Amino acid sequence: MSAPLYGLVLTGGRSKRMQRDKAALEYAGRSQLARAMTLLEPLVERCFVSTRADQKHDAQRAAYAQIVDQLDDIGPMAGLHAALHSHPQAAWLVLACDLPFLDAATLQQLIAARAPQRLASAFRSSHDGNPEPLCAIYEPASRTTIDAWIAADQRCPRKFLAQADVQLLTLNNARALDNVNTADEYQQASQRLGGEALTQPQTLTIQYFAILREQAGRSAETLQSRAPDARALYEELRTLRQLQLRPEQLRVAINDAFGDWSQPLKAGDRIAFLPPVAGG
Amino acid sequence: MSGFSLSATSIDERALRRELFDPACGGYVCFEGWVRNHNEGQQVTRLEYEVYEPLALSEGARIMAEAQQRFGVQQLRCVHRTGALELGEIAVWVGVAAAHRDEAFRACRYLIDEIKHRLPIWKKEHYLSGDSGWVNCERCAAAPSDPHDHAADHGRGAAPALRRAAPGDRHS
Image (cartoon, one colour):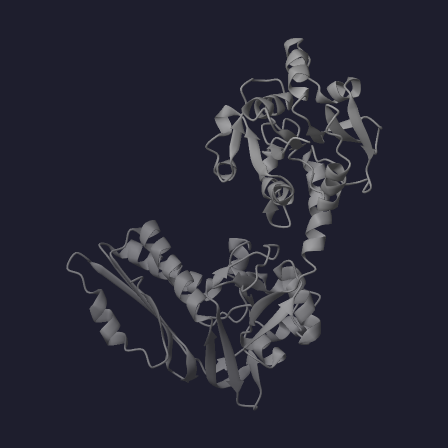
């Protein structure tokens, strides 16, 4: 009989290249940590966030059950080590916190192909064919081997998997494990995922004043729009309502405060485009 | 109470002046903007103000606080009309009382200039010819090649020199 499967999302990385906490990076409005936990929780018996001792009270991480590293400065092995020691009877599905494209189907593929009699089950990288250590299942029996590996001053989990008795799988979704290490990569990933999320239209209210009210033939309207910001919304309305003023002649107000053309819009926002004023 | 308000009915300037009386003040300066019978070669018969009220009230309060802080004046009050106005009516009233005249003059000037350029208030003039037009807006649609023409009326982001050169500047 195979060991119960627990989940672990690693968030203890130093994010040296990104220079921002990867767990907190948002895609389509949700943090990477929340996305990873949401994917993992339904597939495992228990689910934990792996943290460094100094991250324990971080609000985002504190929302979940945590396993705190016992060893410092040995990279992702520290999270795996702490998990295997805290619940020695469990097998661990370990996830990195920088996999924005990971999907439930990929995790299901891993779980279905798990080989409990081996030390671990992992995917081959679709880029270089090496084992992917940070979306993998580690069996309870791997603990003594990993302890010995750390004691021998080895750090790299990829090398560990390359020499251990491991079940290796080919990814059905070749891009599922593409990771994000730099601000540029984040930007690209965020656009790819943000674009998908924005296919849902949201309800917005538009207020028209003065000359724009006359051109639009109404003082307000509520509509469904996919416009991500006021600039895109104005372009939509210009066509829809035959508005004659150009955006550079206008200012934007959102919810009764001066706003910005590129400020992201939320469902329920009230937007006004202000023609040149003439008080006094 | 910010000292800034909007009024849909005639402005009672004597009541406003009484509000500002303060025995610690030696100087009082007031500015009244009146509805004039001509603008840019056209004979004006009446006008209408349209106001985005919540934003005008919050921005008006901000301007009053700025003037108080900058010039250290004791008492400030401003009322702007909304709706339909006849010739000769008071469109905007600004009053400042301070210990000495210099800060009262400067604060009053600051208030009327900022109010004209920053508040979301629009003016529609009706002309003797039967035409009407939104001041500062009609040429926006007519002359799309000159984006600088009206940048002046959007306050923030425009250079101070430009801001004071707004077309249709009726009260200066």
